[in-house]
Amino acid sequence: MTSERATAYGRVVATIEDLGSTKLQREEVERLREAADTLLFSESIDAPGAREALEGTEDLVHHLVESERWTEERAQRLLDDVSACGPLTAV
Image (tube, rainbow, N blue to C red; front, side, top):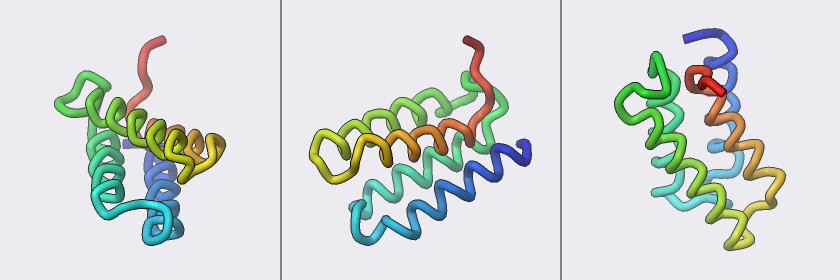
């Protein structure tokens, strides 16, 4: 884990705390926390659950935008922060 990943994790937690009770359902909060935790402690994107955590977060933020509960900008920021919790992926 790097300080950049820990900082990204802090941003995810802050977003959940700031918006969770009004803009997210309890199950969605749990999914985001679990995804951030999984990615933070994964050594590679191929670690058990890492890729699935990222894909699940992508699905969730797309749902939030499509249901018009979140703006595209805000949802992308959350996705970027969750992604930054994880290891770098090869391009």
